[in-house]
Length: 122
Image (tube, rainbow, N blue to C red; front, side, top):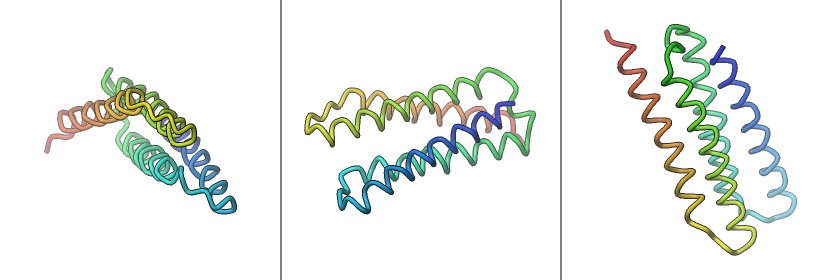
């Protein structure tokens, strides 16, 4: 069930975001604040909400677009935040992985929006 995959992935992003936050506070090192926020908002909140929508409306899981959205969003967020964290921590910021990852997440959300608007007609 795709809803479960979205929700389990959201939980993994939540845990990762929480660990980043738990490092930052005691260490007094807030360089990863954007990574922390994006993992929690794009990972936990957004993917969790999508999972809840799919659980409430199982017919929305049908077709290729929900799977395309899942993979674009998941891989994109990993590339986006991985690239961002690497750049911040190493001082060698590379715009390509950040831009590619962000574009993948955005593309996935556009795919999701198109899919929902097509399927949820009044």
